[in-house]
Image (tube, rainbow, N blue to C red):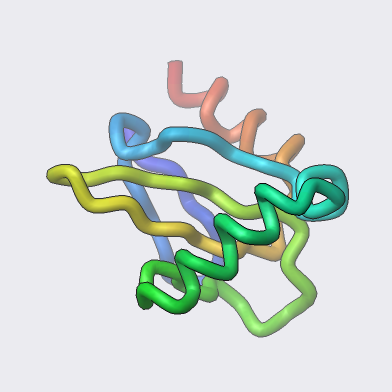
Length: 84
């Protein structure tokens, strides 16, 4: 199944490692360090230029990528549940 992250970005459910709320998780230094490293490595994909509310960590063929989305984690979770 597929998950629409906003704009024209769609990923498959089997790629998803986790969906995280930016406000709650970036309090942790480890999360900020992870996102900073991912950005330096070129693994961050900005889905929309609106204020991001969530980030989605994906892995495909052993390569991790991070998507910044303006869609809340609650809405993304509802979208994944609708497909099952």
